[in-house]
Image 1 (cartoon, one colour):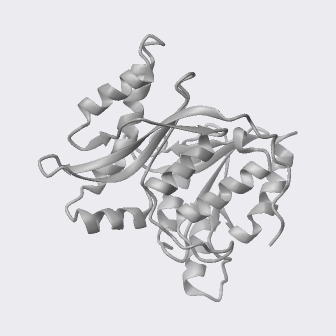
Image 2 (tube, rainbow, N blue to C red):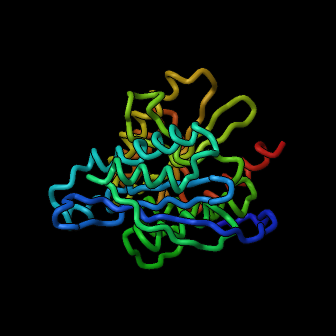
Image 3 (cartoon, rainbow, N blue to C red):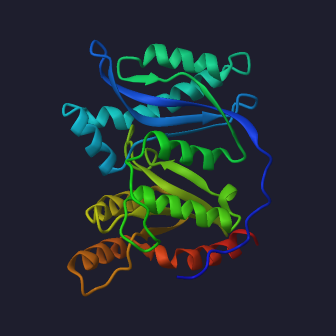
Length: 283
């Protein structure tokens, strides 16, 4: 595996941040809930980051605890919460984020509860979101070296590490909504996006070992984006393993992705790919 590029930006000073754990509440009477997301923000500036569950293994865990869970409702909660935060934020600085969150908690309490606010010191809002999500929400996983099979959360964490060390993390879009390309209220998202030389690029993670069928949904989304975008597009899928045409599952994934115009990139080759991307983004 190629070495990760040692071009990280200088470390920012730590800031006082606040966060809330988000809970799915299937039954208010029984007072039962399960953590499904994290919202972290800067109380001084209002800058915020939000992440809710989306990986199949995370929904499997919820179904074990609450077999009657409505997955579509849970997937829609993120967009609904973001829309409400944006709507109330448009009213101006006269309404602090804490007040907005209190209103959200009151109106969404039949399915979503916002846990009490806690404080934390951190120098990077995105990195802190990932840490808090791992601690409070993500399915616990054993440590594995790069290149071993893993779920999308594992792949995404590695991608974020490489992007940061390449010094291009702040140039990327994160968790891009696809509703503008597919259909209204589509909860699907792509992990990362960027713009270079008049082209908009998209990067998504794909666990071939655990969910090779996700290649079909990714290809569907890619075709809609390419068909509706008013600009040049390019797509890459970061996979947990290198793909071999001698393996039937791998061959299915490769053919499905390439037919849609998606470049498959194994984790072990991702740092090299990012080095090439960096040179064009920083021109």
